[in-house]
Length: 272
Ligand SMILES: C[S@@+](CC[C@H](N)C(=O)[O-])C[C@H]1O[C@@H](n2cnc3c(N)ncnc32)[C@H](O)[C@@H]1O
Image (cartoon, rainbow, N blue to C red; front, side, top):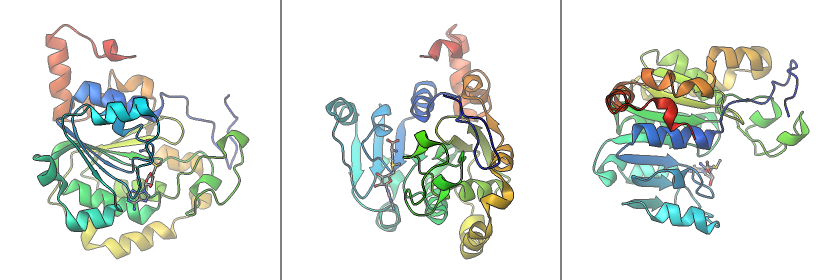
């Protein structure tokens, strides 16, 4: 049910859910590999049919249908640890035997964690790889608390929604890395940001990491406004993304669009 927008609450996003966005990315891009930070019950990990590497301090998989899909991949590597420790000890591209092609960063929902996850992941990507970020467009402020579900929601059905303050990371990336290309989709509950045109050699974020964290923590969503943040993120409808957004995602997507056209299929055929 759609809630009216108020100063302290936006309506629920009306697009396709984030899992459907991810599933479509897999279907359209057919990446050779998938890297995920934050797996929880395995629903996002289950969507990848390619060689996959996932990092989480815990993997509480319970649903056998999900588990079957997860273990049916050609290669599966699970690292039961926090992402910082993973990157200290391991090289995801070396483990996968290739640059990371598609990544989903959905681990600790605090802005400095997501910034580190992004910096550490980009180093192992190709320029046309895609890094997807979750939960960067909150629809009300209580869900943005840095502590898990610390405040009750304004809209009752959002009581389990927690984005933390990773909205700050997406805002920082847009400001400090104009060389990156961003597509923000209105996937409920709080958006998916697709980042490409990556620069694995860039040190712009790492060199001024402390300053960037201070900058992020200095931002107030109350002062910025939820609507203004969403506007700055240039949120687009997921319903358009198959036909137009993917065409702008970069070489990988263009290659897929080209081969679909040659085979006489339209991207709309891929809609479920
Ligand atoms: C929102 S859940 C992930 C949901 C999953 N991606 C999905 O769509 O089904 C967040 C996960 O991040 C994990 N997490 C928390 N801190 C982390 C860290 N420092 N490094 C890696 N994962 C972390 C949690 O254990 C939790 O399983």
